[in-house]
Image (tube, rainbow, N blue to C red; front, top):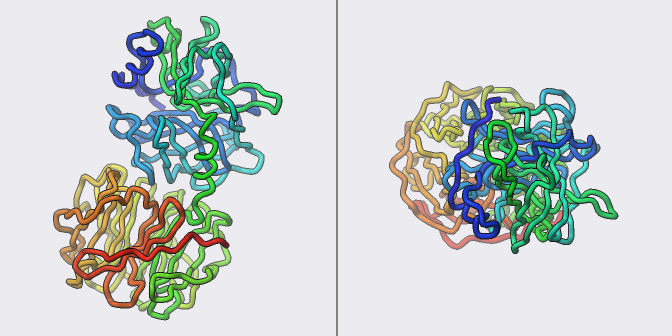
Length: 504
């Protein structure tokens, strides 16, 4: 992999200058570089993150803090490198992969999975990154420290970035870093010896200390002067890390908050009332929650005997044209799967109807061209929106319908305007809600902002849940509650019906 030289961020540099009297600090990334290989047990809990594709790809490190979640620096996933901590919740814009439990970057074993969701901290340079599949039971998350590091303490940083002699080391390395001062959110650091430093390659490297209970996580590296690192003339080893000793509640809430990994909606049991389909976070099975026609949902029914592990996108509509809702799912392996519905809370098997979907980050399903067969629109990581017309069995090649979709984090499709043509609703990273009215041929009119404050919604789908023949919106809030917004057939919505997260 080609290592990309990071930009220098003056705003981030100012933070260190204020506490350490220094001048310029490199904003991204920072990694333990000049020490020895990390111990196998510790290395198994440190993640190597590969973010982006081609010449602009970059690497970061992170700490496994739950079987399916990696904690790292927000800057790792920034699209705008001038504002590296401004990262939106939801699917990452750039294709991202986490590798954990592998002693060698080029080796085998361990756990490799796509990063499918980001949950940034609102108060500091931290983000929780959810993997599509949980790590194996033998790969243990790092324990969180309950107290801060103290001034003068020596911490061990562990990461996969550049070293004193290697651009891309084959294994995680360590560096001993001495704590200088603490603020409410950060630690200032310096190499414990002339041979210890943090270098380019892995923002997000965990900072660890030994306690009576074992190794514990006290911080995450964010930026460094990179003294002694390969290719650098700088000699100073000053660095900054984000504290993690006081975010245990946020980490636990994030890791345990979501009862639904993915969501879609449609009349899946044939009673003319929209049902809710979710992949359950507890067991990876797909469940149908029958709708009661008012915006409430009943006891879930398991849709199929197999687990839906590894699915990262989900959509539902009548793809086959038989009047029954079907399911379409994108797997982390890049395949697109079609599951024809049987109209009785089940499916009649599955088939691969596409491949190479690894670069697709959002999908929405509806009959966009009026032939009574379900089609797809898909937002690519490059920001383009593609239209894929369905023929009842699979899909034709995609055509680009528009560009500039990089900052959209959720899509849903249906006839929201009541003109018989499928439209798109999209949630922007800012939380604004935009309507793209359809032209009936897979293309769309200029966006119109119709709402705001949707930044706390994490899953979205269209459905006529009240049976009035108007498209409604269903959303799952970050607190787990289900919001059912009745559509008025004119592109707007009424007061939502709110259902608390299921308890079982």
